[in-house]
Amino acid sequence: MTYSLITFRDPGTGETRAGLESGGRVLPLTDANLDLPGDRLTLEAVVEHWDKAEGQLDRLAEEPSAGWLDYADLTVLVPLRPQQVLQAGANYRQHVIDLAVAHRDGEGTEEEIRARTAATMDRRAAEGTPYFFIGLPTAMASATEDLVLPGYSQAHDWELELAAVVGKRAFRVSPEEALEYVFGYTMVNDITTRDLVFRKDMPAIGSDWYRSKNAPGFLPTGPLVLPAKFVADPQDLMVTLRLNGETMQAESTADMIFTVAQLVSHASQQMPLLPGDLVLTGSPAGNGAHWGRMLRDGDVMEGTITGLGTQLVRCRDEVAP
Image (cartoon, rainbow, N blue to C red; front, side, top):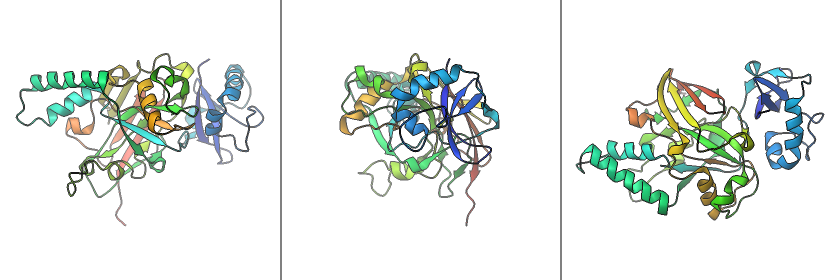
């Protein structure tokens, strides 16, 4: 039976708990039904000790035991807190082509630019390497928390992404073995303040990902983590974001320039990836920069990725002190 893992607030005690979700029900994980090393039974502990947890969770998902809760009645929290968040940029073919067209400056017709950029992406996929930057875990928020739009800009944008959750320490692993190090998958909306991406005062330095991507709540994550064994092919998932009910992003992960396996492998070449770390895989075409429309007070973003539940994030302007 397929199941996912969540972190939620216990409706009775208010405590933070890990839970097994299946078919719209959640079984709280306790020392009585899951035997793992350590003092605290968290989703991070499940990831780290998957070799011991997997069989027990398989049995729990099949048992009609008492204690199941209704998912709809729960407050779902950030599923886990990674030590490291690695983010891949410009990793969807159509997205990069659209950006090239949007920023064209007398370099040919739209058709010529599309064809030229597509050829460049093909060469990059065959010969190049992914582009990574580092995000801060402190920017993470749950899949239902309000997103406060900082008052220093009016150019906050959405970027829904598939994220791989690292299951065990991975250092300099090959693409062929990389998926063996993936515990599962979750969903992240990588919010970006567009007018802070490039430093106008220091153009030679280039992009400023710290300021443009790490405000509080800029990484809505979850609601769940789906173990990798329930994902037949991470390159065959649909990423969809609706803004106030209108579809803005709708693309298959098949459009990635570098696959999940390639991204995990490349990310592991410089630094060890640790259990629970997130590797974000880039965002498909259709963000606000593409539509010429940034996030506003009152907007509602609904994000879905095949098998990974639903994010429902409401935006509100920051209230000046």
